[in-house]
Image: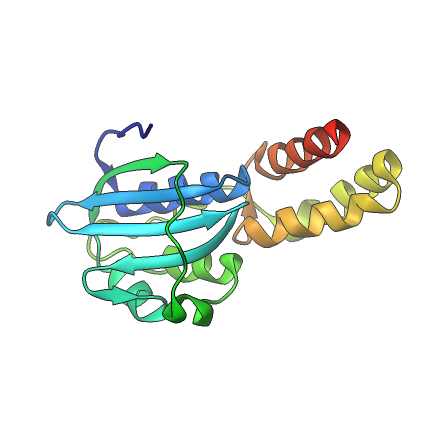
Amino acid sequence: MATEHEELSYPELVEALRQHCLAMQTGTWIVATRDNHALRIGIDSGKIVKVAFLNLKGKAALTRVRKVTGGRYSFTKDVLPAGPADTELPETRQILQFLVQGGGTATTTSPTTGIPIGRVKNVIIEEATELLEPMGPTICEECFDNAGGYVDESGVGQCYFGRLHRNRRR
């Protein structure tokens, strides 16, 4: 079941998408834009695997997404199947960086108000290695790749500890 959120600006929408990726969620992120168009982004374990906007898919849709000025979004656990155009998609980190640079005319402020990953990466990897030994760096790298170049105070920590929790249940 999807929960619809209040209307957000473009930077807020991109930040919400980034948070879903950081949380390693799987499902479809759906936006009803202010212009009443549908944007659908498929996420599989935190990785963006599908983008559909207007009559475009994959990379072609990404360029048009940057013209969105805002809208309402919902997230459902159902994943749209990837098509041929989606195989051309860049990595999630690159997609998020690309979207951060867009924003139509909504605002010029960046939705990524967090800390650049470079400042905290080594510390987090050291701690993860101490806790998880050889798996720590691997899990961290996946989280860093999904973070879009920035972390908030708990973003990578949420991703890292979520993966740790899932791995311990196995």
